[in-house]
Amino acid sequence: MSSLQPTQRATLSYFTWAFIVTGLGLALGLWLGFATEHSFGGAMKVFFIVCVLAVLEISLSFDNAIVNANKLKDMTPVWQQRFLTWGILIAVFGMRIVFPLLIVVIAANVGPWSALVMAATQPEEYSRIMHEAHLPIAAFGGTFLMMVALSFFFDHEKDVHWVRWLEEKITAYSSVKGIEIAFVLVVMLVFSEVIESQKGAVYATTFFHAAIWGLLTFLLVEVLGGVLDQSQQVLAGAAKGGLGAFLYLEVLDASFSFDGVIGAFALSSNLFVIAIGLGIGAMYVRSMTIMLVERGTLAQYRYLEHGAFYAILILSVIMYVQTLTHIPEVITGLGGAALIGVSLWSSIRWNKAHAAD
Image (tube, rainbow, N blue to C red; front, side, top):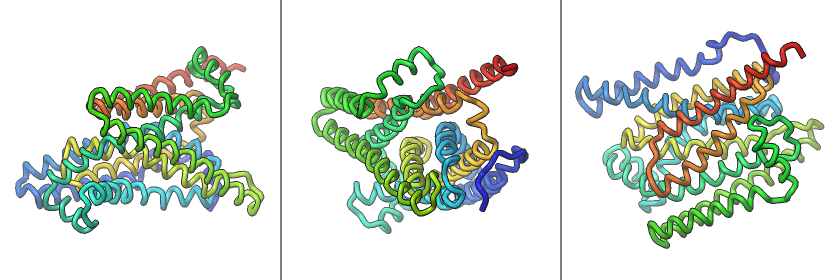
């Protein structure tokens, strides 16, 4: 298997599998609608929900695809292929089906089979348990994503700045060891105090413990990734990401998925409808990732990556805020897409201005 290198491949060809999965998923959604609602109108309602969930997942995952592509381009061809095959299976089946089941298994103290039966026969009760678990999930995922974003900006080797007046100041402090960790800890403490004043000490303690685990997970993945990849570099003689980078991307994908999976229950309480809709969206994220890597899009548009990490930072803050109040998922999705759109427009302007250089 050769490395994913820039090509002139037609744009639509990248989305062949995504289109196939879309067709199968929509057909399955229609069948599921007939099976559960026993009417054409009910089938169309489920069909519409599947479509909305797919679009929601795509809009929420633009930044995910860009960050995946940034990490993927430095991985060995073998690990690139493994991420694009195993990774998508973990993303679709692990995060969209196993993860929600695992939450109910832990929260309701029932077995996996009982949780699956509950999802099929008692969707309202299943949805209620999922929503009650939102606080620790938002705290964990928000902390992990905040560390991902801040690690990009607090980088002393970073020499391309989009919002120059801000990013140059941040980079100037990047030599201070652990500054991004200290920043996240301060944010965690502030939110813990606010949550305690509004919801009580139990909620604040739950938030803080989950946030600490999110921070530790990021640090452990970074350390483990470095150790594993260093070992592979010695064996393979090539300074390219392998198992460590794969683990980092899997945890990153999981953190991106937290908000979408929980938010999906606002549209449907049926686990299988949610899995179909979000699974379709995940296939488009995979296709976008491959296209970005093969076409070298990140190198062509210098600020696109910046837009993605700003979107990640804002998403992490939104996940924190959602521990206090509900924020519609459409705002999250459109906000991230808008930031990436502006960064793309800025990149095009820069390319035109420096075309003659």
